[in-house]
Image 1 (cartoon, rainbow, N blue to C red):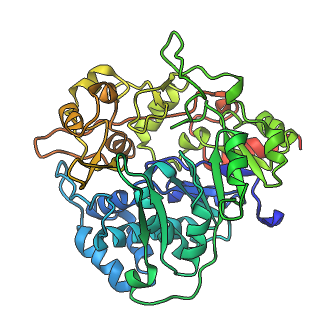
Image 2 (cartoon, rainbow, N blue to C red):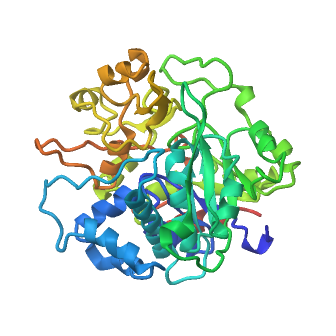
Image 3 (cartoon, rainbow, N blue to C red):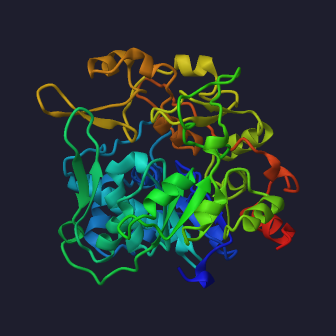
Length: 467
């Protein structure tokens, strides 16, 4: 990887939609790596089109999609001139699954293209996209859409992204790309995309984006670096205090008096062992200060990844009112071992009126109508099914899992969409409540104005560090 194109600061990919194109573009314009979240971009694009696409940004991006008829089909399905009336439910999008679905793939490709296109528009800075290994069913189509728009980097965590280097190689040449998907109780399956079949033509080869694996341990980094087929172009090493999901502690999980996972020495990544792999790396989770950058560089890192400081800036995708309330409540963040359907601990910010409050959680009718965190399983008759611990408990139990696995699970899909102002309004009048997340180390707030910008974050870290 050319050192000339290595950023010192990576703006973390925060989903759903917190790291949108406006934030990524603002960071890229400072000369650092701006990153859009690739999580659930299909539904965010569809809902913004149904709101009338204020400003016309999405339509401008779609007008540049290389196969106009595909973009036109997406617009025809979802665009509502002037926007739908307030309180009208959003039209659903096709749910992720192992079986092929052309409309679903078209929407995913177009949505990821549009987000990266807008983030890259008007400058020559670096733009990346962040995906989650836990949402494998979305990855091939999403990655291809981002690559069509010229994404410079792909970042992925929340699992072991061993097959992503090969997938990017294949998609860059418009070859069919596939990755493995585990199926509980059955044989493994794959999910993929055939670009030529989808587009109806073969385009010129694409620039292959650099791939950064987001990991929490030097052991996993060494595992991925063992082979050219799995080796990424670099790593982001994330500590447990980072916002959103974090890896569970190694070994048996032990909770402290507050009910949070206890991390010990085994959970500390050895930066020296990562450096010995010979690949560039960045440190994340509690490093978003000038002193944090100095510590990272002293440990051999290229720099740092910063999320929470950008989540609270003006260009963040968070609903502005929720963003201001979240800033006031920074420091009131719990690493909840049960909130996420993934089974990974998840940072839940305690903000009134959100799913952090037990009464709000209990009042929400349990349902799983978006399904990004569903996992496939094989039924007794050999057919495939999908289940999520956040769905109704009796439904989850009928799918062969114990009820206690569903206890306390929040619907991250709907809650995070509500946090960016795209919450569903049900036909019965019920509006989905938001769910907010933030990192647990709030030192990044020192020295930042109350209504800070992305450029303020970059300047404070880079100008304040003694490098």
